[in-house]
Amino acid sequence: MAGDRYIDGAMEQRIQAELAGIEARERVRILLAVESGSRAWRFPSTDSDYDVRFLYVRSLEQYLSIEAVRDVIECPLEGDLDIGGWDLRKALQLMIKSNAVLIEWLTSPVRYRAQTRFAERLLELALSHCDPAALAHHYDRLARSSFAEIQSAEGPARFKTYCYALRAALALVWIRQLRQPAPMGLPRLLAVLPAGSSLRRAIDELVARKAQATEGDLSPRVAAIDDFLAECLETAAERPASIGSPAALADANAFFAAVLLAEGA
Image: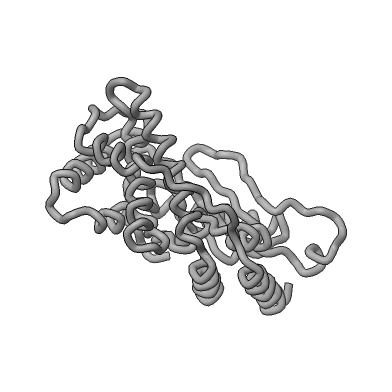
């Protein structure tokens, strides 16, 4: 991974060691490992965790066994490192349901591990079968949850909560306007707002103040941001009645088989 200003070099080495340890301990092969939290969203605080997420495959022998094998790997939180991953089978099951989190992992600006062709092909597959309405519903729920926390404070709110609400709301606006998945990072999401607007200035100022704060620090309420969030969430994004298709399932099955055979798993 090329240097990233939000990722400490020593921490990156620790993450690489942790990933290697997981492969040896769990007898898996990690195909993609990324940053998924505020550092990838481009608005970390001074004490933000590292949120590492990965996709892995097991051996073909394990997939053919009648014994159930867990499809997630969760590691104990150690200091500021939070690391966990999904079996590729689970990821593909979620993909056919237009899972927004998987698309975020595949488009993260910070990659610790990546088989490039694998990641590119899986992203192509996810984009070809994603339902914008399902993605909009996901971000609508995230934005509502964070905005409700802001409103319940009846005063200053956490910088973290403000930024979470903003990112989800901007992703929702992006999907509504462009009918396509939203980018992961906040700077790119700001493209849906008029350049030089008072709202963009307010957001830039909030993010700059968060960069000097801790995860628990509070921000005075920002009227322009509160108004934007309220307006964005005035109409709820409904969950689609059905998600997924036979074509998506067939493509996911073919992809899964191709990966296992190529890996010699």
